[in-house]
Amino acid sequence: MASKILSAHTALVPGSDLWVLPQLTESYWTERINWYLNFQISRAESHKSKALSDLQIQEIHEFDLPHFEPQNNIPNALLIGSRDSLPNSQTIVLKFNQDIEVWLKDIQHIWSALGQPKIRIFAPKKIKAENISQIWTEEKLSIVESQSSRYV
Image (cartoon, rainbow, N blue to C red):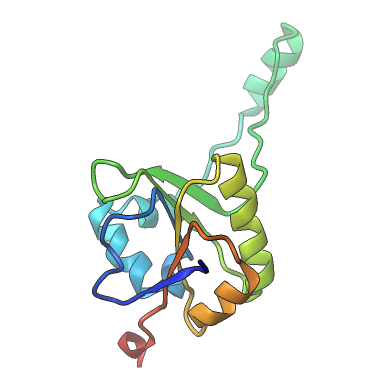
């Protein structure tokens, strides 16, 4: 069995544990799901991490304290626990940079790290579900096309 293409009417029904979306500017679905997630996506996009002050860095060195830099193996990825808000367990927002193969490769890396759950990919604007299913051949995949008519 190949991947399953879902209609707009079945896009938000249960069936996949992991949902993957492009950033807000690339999908109608991301905007809609952002609302269900209490705007966590839009808040995270505007969030800037604070850097340590010079005093803090000086004290780290002075007292020989361990200093840990957060590791982000997939930049521009946001993982949200969505069990209480949506019919899935986790939602990932992954920045789409107009290269579907790179985007899907990053998704596959995250998907593998999470134990390969059933996955639903919400396609970015101007990307057809068939393009995704030709690259990603896993059976655990369902795809929702972007509703480009909402942007016209």
